[in-house]
Length: 225
Image (cartoon, rainbow, N blue to C red; front, side, top):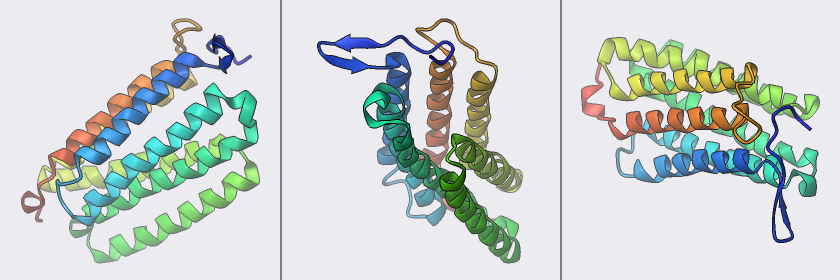
């Protein structure tokens, strides 16, 4: 058993492993899908549209993780986790491309095109490596590159020039996501019934909500540089 892992519960004959971890995953998924649908009519801007797909695919990858990676891992087997990993890589990829298109005018065409090529190479590399290494570490490294290096840095540059609320809340969101990672790293567990993964999922949900708030405040006419 993983240290601090939730004990298995049974509902009739149905076995559910890591029930609280699964439940907090579902909370995060709910925020992701809420963010996707609530921002539908905000704008047709390409950057915002890509952020919306980031919400959707991140929620979808976590749904796979909740069911296959936690609740019913005993049934599907560990190899089935790859479906969530691949979907997660695509999800984060949408965030980094969203940031690129959102700040395109701020950074200029030459920088935009250079970073676009770099991001394509990084995404393809991550997709290949996840099958070669067969480890969630690849997804974590990809997420760090996409969210911390690309989204945070680019949106920070854009915010300084435009005071964009989307940029500001994306930065806040990534900051809270880093707190979620720290919960995992330092195994901050209150008990087996609320472990480091559960606490991490709460921070992840808050992170996604902050990103949603930024997307919902997007006003392209105020972001001209």
